[in-house]
Length: 309
DNA sequence: TTCAATGTTTAGAC
DNA sequence: GGTCTAAACATTGA
Image (cartoon, rainbow, N blue to C red; front, side):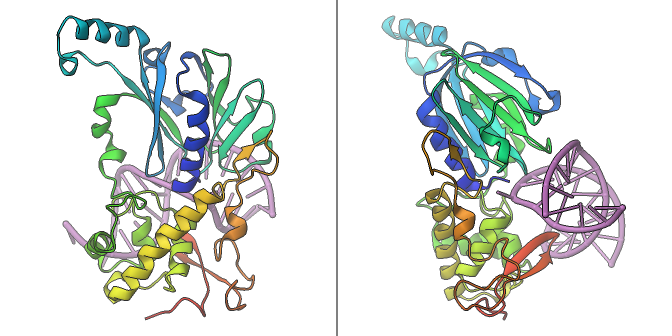
């Protein structure tokens, strides 16, 4: 499902719509999808959205608490000492999750691509429905029920087991060639495609972008880290950033839909060089793209452009 | 009918 | 501990 670019596409779309709204009610259609106390986010106001790896976060605060903090400040008590009770909604879309926002004017949908994304909600895949203070709604859909929504205390995010183990964000400035090399060398015996998909090594890369990054770096996905030279690390670094940025630029591979803004569909898969193109001619050399299994995942590559060692 | 699907976790084997 | 494989989660559609 959604990898980094798809989740970022969702975040960018939601960001414009939901900042400042309060959550008025939550309906849970599948109990396993929603973890934590739903009551602790009711009437809370959305102040921020963020993304870490493939995880989406929505930070909320209680307006009444904010007001109290203001009073405390005027009484001369340092803001930093005031008790905080902010909450965060954490989303992980796993393989088939979608987030859909609807108000009276438009629908915005991102995540796993399905034809019914822009139809009336809730539908049979809807697991959680949020209703906001202005009457607009947000749906968490998930066909395979692998995904989840969690309520946590914002300051306890560090204790989230998935968040805790994440490697560096590949689109951060700090993600240099040296950082990439150092992270990868922790697993010298792993195939390059497998190691860059490991969330503890680098955050946010999944099966599509791993394949695209290997193509960009002209590396056979089976090449082991120990076989890579400095030029390979450099090319791979470029390839990772290029493919992720292209994904965001084209609205993600999951066909984000702004229904009332014609033509704004996620198109990344149209631009993909190898993913999902078994037997089709390589866009660079015209030789057919091959598909193999690597570490249990379907793996596409061009046997001519991508070099073995 | 069988298989594979944009993810993560866990268990077991060597 | 490192590495690899398989299975589990659950559903749908080719």
